Image (cartoon, rainbow, N blue to C red; front, side):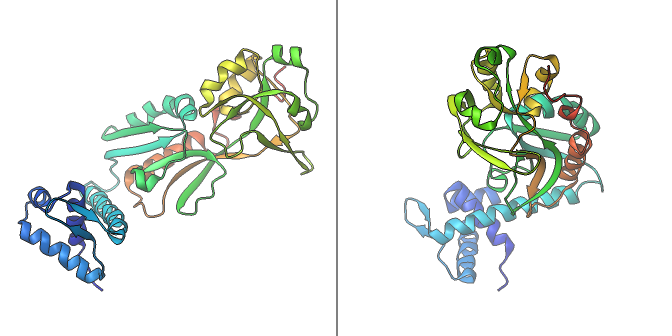
Length: 310
């Protein structure tokens, strides 16, 4: 089967604008040509894509699937055209980046001026969001994630480990005591990251590889780490916090870490992009920059934080 790829572009425009007439005007084609392209596409695919009435168009189930693919084909073609029109190695156009909110504000945002100065013809569209986004569906070129990455549809470059520690203020531990074993945490109050599947369930591993699970009490649940800090800083609760959130306060003594011989679930900072994404010059430039700033041994939160901070 040899399907005319132009037909996919025509079909995508018809669905996007909701009519053959509007699509014909946008594409500078006759309405009859647009209709013929859609009919030929349906013939080649051997499925009906659209339900046609005098008032509106609606997608069939197959039409919905084909529309998603058609939009990707159009996006890939546009990306290829932009790259082809650039001088080899030039970094131009718009780069859409997704990153977690707290990491984006504290770590990525401060280094972006350096990246933009290096590539002045590049426009950055940075979206900070703590939920896990679908890069393809939401149109991102590249993303940074702090996670245990399992999505095989993505290409991931490991950057820095993100150690997590149990932290609280000295006043909290003075008032409530210092836990000596993970099981002791069940007697303490926590702020919990609500985007985790089971935020109250925590697992720790000792140096010998032994693990223990403990269920803690959550006095405050939130989907953003920065918003948790008011509760922690007021001495009202503990938190299992990533080091990029708490490293500075551990250095200053404002926070204290406990149970340092027990490691919570390890996380890693990744820079990722979809398998189907053409690795354009702009994506390659950002991946290289991310390795330069956050690669092995480079991350700021890895420097000079003692075990206990006191």
